[in-house]
Length: 130
Length: 306
Image 1 (cartoon, each protein chain N blue to C red):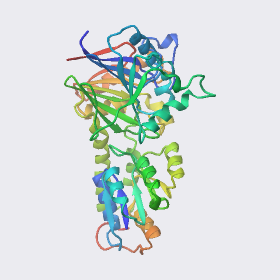
Image 2 (cartoon, rainbow over the protein chains, first blue to last red):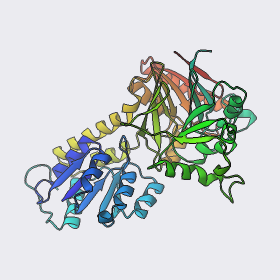
Image 3 (cartoon, chains in turn orange, purple):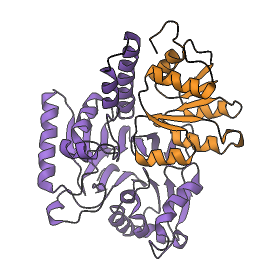
Image 4 (cartoon, one colour):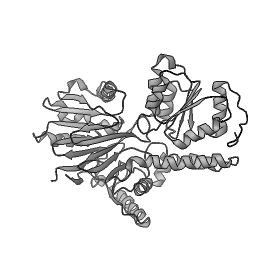
């Protein structure tokens, strides 16, 4: 299972379109608080995490996530418009697997999902090409 | 004076600029007082909070205040170790800033007041220290309603939208506007984009823009980062500050009534700020906007009525 945390509806649609055809469940949350509520009881294979969201930001969520014993090693990819060295350092310190700049291309999203979930990244049916 | 007002005590970003060529705007770093009757709210505790503290010690009507910090970079907290009310037992200070809880806020403030950086620790403060706590995303300080929101600046950094005396005052000291434009534009010209992905990227660009504007929408007063000229911004992209042109355009798009250009670059003398202001007014005129725009300066007061 893959979790997306991003306040942008268009970004969430982009992840959903990119994952179409992959045999993976994708759950999206538009706020950090909604996501942490879900993640307390669920253990996805991968989390895509935005930083700047209106209320709680993504790095604060990542810190809270790492404080949960069951999420110390959950793979998290930070995907953000903020290419700040300080944020990269914090994300690395908090064990984020990658720190990538928005917007990702569909093929990148698919490759990352394939790498972290083990599902096969094949050309999907319908939607835009990988 | 009207019972509700905003007063600038420090308008510079980065570091204090106590130079003769800078004195019309002033040399102190970020600090704005919002006053509503006997309720005092201070946005940021840069060096401008030092003269504010001295002014507060000269009166005995009010003994409680709130301080909102946008973040903990030096130019936003460097005045706290010299803020007289903190060292005076009859005062109560209510603090708020980024942090999971009050322990984190207290620690962020305390760090700069420890050896080898400073001789006196926060433990020597004699005022009662309390912490503001949001409820459903809002904080109340007397009649002032405060909504914190995240902005584009390294680390967790807040802007604040205040409702005071029926007016909306938005304080955003550090914010890099339109940061996402270039990466999306670069993606949009990639040769192998199909129509579906192209449309999603366009939607993302539009949504990011409106998401950035959302906290400023219809503000009566917007106090916003306008640190750089386009030339300086090109060299300092990714430092977390805005070019004044982006600030003016965003204020127009967000239908703001009155914009105050703030967090001014400490290397810019008054004459240079005059030319930035002149150019800001040209942009507003050419866009046919009714936006009013001033360069923030120390001592300037915005009357909120009330």
